[in-house]
Amino acid sequence: MPGRAVPGHSAVWRFAVRVLAWLAPALLAWYLAAPWYDPLPTWLARGILGVYRAGLVLGVDPAARMLTFVTSIPAESERAGWLVVEVNPLLYTYGSALFLALMMASRASWKRVALGLLVLLPFQAWGIAFDLVAALIRANLVQAAGLAGWRAQVGALLYQLGSIILPTIVPVVAWGALERRFIEELALRRTPA
Amino acid sequence: MADARFAVRFAVILVLLFTAELTAPVQHALVEPWTAAVTHASQGLLDLFDPAVISFGNVLASTRSGFVVSIEAGCNGVEAALVLVAAILAFRAPWRPKALGIVVGLAAVQVLNVIRVVTLFYVGQWSARAFEWAHLYVWQTLIIIDVLVVWLLWMRWVGTRAAGAGGAGAGGAGA
Image 1 (tube, rainbow over the protein chains, first blue to last red):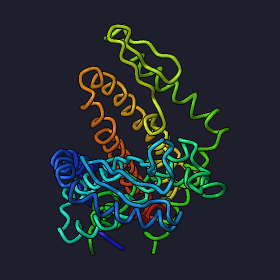
Image 2 (cartoon, rainbow over the protein chains, first blue to last red):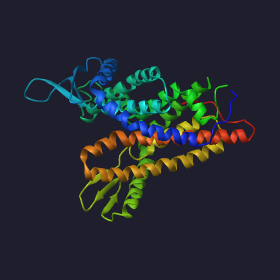
Image 3 (spheres, helix red, strand yellow):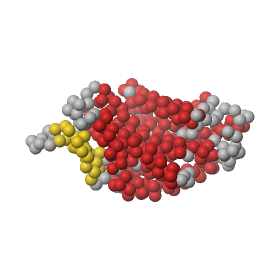
């Protein structure tokens, strides 16, 4: 794909400055929108948990920006009830703000922004779902939750990936996939022929 | 097509590196000593203007305020480094620029990571809520932006070299 050269490294630095300038408003928008946005990955997280271990989650109660999952594990107390696990969905959705900042900095269309945010959802759901699983593993409830064997091993790995790597990587990859031409112009010294 | 190949290579390399990082031998041989080194480097920087800061293992502590933080997975810069290494290795380019990109890029990521630790150490003594925000959301985002910028600069440098050498060599990526 032939192209003409564009100015040196300064184009990358200008882009970096624009990303940083957009980051604060993007974080503010993400935080303010969380009560309306979080139900989407939460709903998907229930679906993932249903596949991973059917019947593990009886319900989920979103309150004060925290998710309270009601599990099918009997609570160890004198009162009858089910064990509940709290998950902070913000830990897995803040990548939406990063994605928004990257898209604004590359002057992407709103259609692409919306498409990208949809792409992020399953990965954010992954993080939420396996945060719950990790909490059960940490509490030595593997047997009670029916997670013995491969489920616990796989659950632990998926939690690590979903909590440490994916929240920041997926937004960057989604941005890269949607703004491929921008990257080519920016870093590969190409402009559309 | 080249973009798809890059994406697959990047994902495979990243998952392999990350899975290897989680194994006990790699944790004991590399990650734990590295985390201790990051802690020590942060303490060394802090010591320039605050001699009340001490470090032991992966723990930083202020003998004046009693504030203590431990540097854990996700904050030691290892995962960000793995992302950068995977992105550089997955990109089609000669090995020498790749090696140079990894060395210089890792240095850039680790310098910012030490700055992250130092700033979080002071933000934590000022406000627990600000610490939570800075630690969990803001700095995580800034570190990955650092990785992205380093990778973009490296790609541009590789492209310039290739153009200077007659246009052959590098190419074939999106993200």
